[in-house]
Image (cartoon, rainbow, N blue to C red; front, side, top):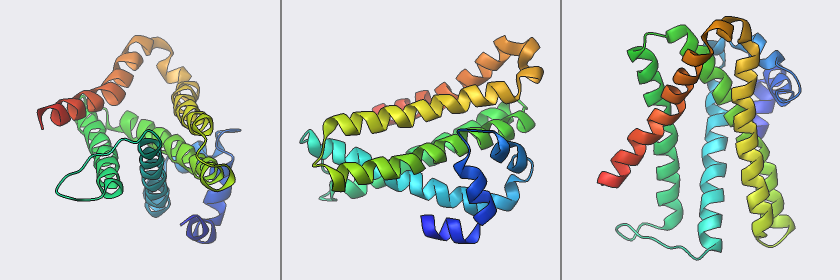
Length: 196
C-alpha cells in the first residue's frame, strides 16, 4: 500500500512526509482535498490495518481473548476498528451539519485526518520494529502508542496555529467545537457499545 501511494502520488507523498516539520501539505492540499480522496483513503486503510494489528498484539500480549460466533479475534478487531473510524468520521460530519459549519469542519477534518494518517504511518515502522526487531516488548508498544497519541495532539495544535487569526476572537467557541467534534462521537459510540 505504501509503495502504491509513493508511486502514484509522488509529490503529495513527499509533502505528506514533511507534515510534522512544516504545514506545506495542509496549505497546499486543504482546498483541493477532493482531488486526493484516493491518497487519503489509502492512508486511512494503512491506519486501520496498523491499529487493528496493534490492538490485536496488545490483547495477545495480555492474554485477553474474546469470541463471537467462533470468529477469530483478529477479524473482530479489524471490523471493530473499521466501524469505529467510519462512525467517528460520519458523526463528525453530522455534527458539522447540525451546527452549520461545513467550511470549518472540512478544514478541521482534513487536518485531523492528515495527522491521524501520519500517526498511523509512523506506527507502521514502530510496530514492524516491535514485531520483527525485538520480541513483543511492552515498552516499545507503549512508546508506539504514546507517539501515536502525541501526533494526534500535534494535529490539534497545528490546526489552532494555522487558523489562529480566525480563531483569536472565538477561542471559547473553538473549544466547544473541538468538544463537539472529538468527544461527542466517542460518547455516541460508547453509548451504542454499552447498550449492545
